[in-house]
Length: 108
Length: 122
Image 1 (tube, each protein chain N blue to C red):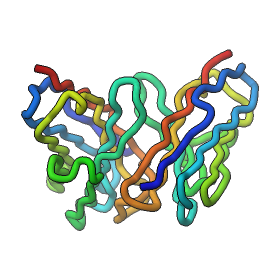
Image 2 (image 1 turned 135 degrees about the vertical axis):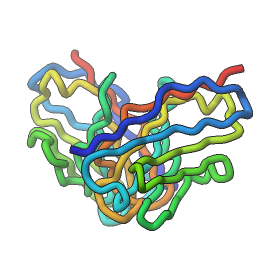
Image 3 (image 1 turned 30 degrees about the vertical axis):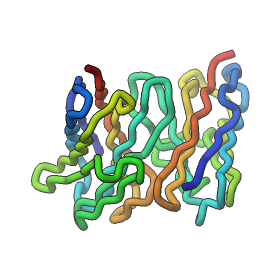
């Protein structure tokens, strides 16, 4: 099983600042089969990034993903008020599919 | 657009079973995996398993093997997750999600349901 470790657990930032979220895998994620999701209270989860760096339909270009192998990053270039949420990474290269523990981005 | 609507909250006794439904609309149902993911109170996301309806192929997380059954009714575009021998640790919100890539269980989850709270309590 591929274990995903996200850091930091909580990120306290102000609107307009840059957010950098990390996701580290216990073993290589083949063909960069890694996704990022956003979770907000009362809303359905939203797919942001798949294939480590491809933005899903309708996702603003302030969201970007990078990385390969065991180290992946989600960057939000300039935080908007609606971006304060919890973010999860997920690998889909092997069974069982696994998620990271999440990073909460909160308003400072 | 693709929408997934789940059945309502359930309260169950230990050792009983629960069956949660997920009705999809918009887009193809049979060609895309329906995955089930759960989230215990205050915890992260945990994959339960998935089904690709066109092949009727399922894949389950090992910790649920023998206790979970995921099925799909192509005539109503509805997927089901049944979990048996419930224990208190199964208390969680259960989400269904439709895959982004056709005909594979192993892919990103492009569309999510609103979640169904299952509470296991005596």
